[in-house]
Image 1: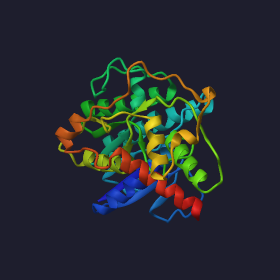
Image 2: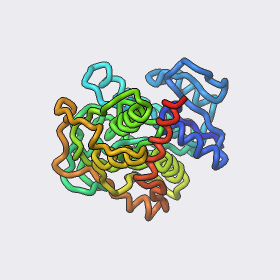
Image 3: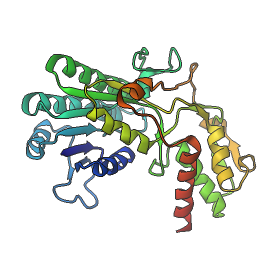
Image 4: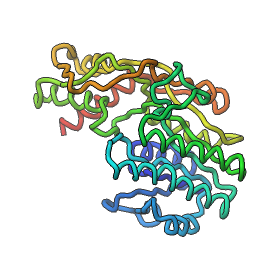
Length: 310
C-alpha cells in the first residue's frame, strides 16, 4: 500500500513515516525543501500551490492513503505567512480532495488540524463538538481544512478524516517552541555553555503529548471503518513550571537556581484551559497516548544533552 505524507521532513512527518513503514506501507514524501537527498521516487520537492503539477504527480504515484501534514507551525503576523497557511491548508486540501473524487475514489485522506480552532475556549475540556472561535489566520485555515473534509465526506463520499491536534512534542520539535527551548537550555547549562534560562509565564497550562503517539493516531484514523473528525490529546494539563521542574530534575538540578522570568516573554493565556477530550478516539479508534509527560520530557532532555556532548 502506498502512503503519501506531505510535510515529510517535519516532526510529525518523520514519526509518521516510521509508523507507516512499521505497518507495511510504502511511504512517499512531499516536501517544499529542495535541499538534501530527495531519494528519487520516494521524496518529491513540490510547490503546494501548483494544482496541475500536484495532480500530475498524484496520477503518477497513485497513493492509497494521503496524510496532509504540511503546514507552517509557528503563527506569524505577516501577509506572506497568512497567504502561505491558507494556500496549504485550504487550496492544497481542496486539490487533494478533488483529485480523490475525480480520479481515485478509494484513496483515503487525513488532514492535520489544530486545537487553535477553539481560540479562547468557551468550555474545557474541548471535544469534536466544542464551538470554534478561530482568532488568527492559522486557526481559520485549519478550521476550513476540517470543514472541506466534512463537505467532501457528505457530498462525494470521500473517506476524508481530520485530526484536531493539541500540543505534541518530541526531540524533533523546533527550537522556537518553549518545550525545546527548555530542554536545550538545560543541556546548555549542564555543558557550561549558559548560566540561566529566560522564560515567560511559568503558570501557562498546556496539554502536551508525544508526536509518536499522534503518528499512531493518524494511521489508525485511516484504518477505521468510517471517516470522521477526532480530537487527539493527552487529556492532562501541565504548566511550563512543571516542564521546567522535570527537565532540570532529570539533569540533577533545581530549576529555581537557573530560570529567570522576563515579562517580555509573556503571552495572553486562555480564560478556559485548552484541554483535549479524546474519548471519541478511544471509543472508535482504540487510541490513547502511551508515552507520559515525564517520559516525554526526559526523552527530549536526553537528546539535547547528547547533542551538546557531541
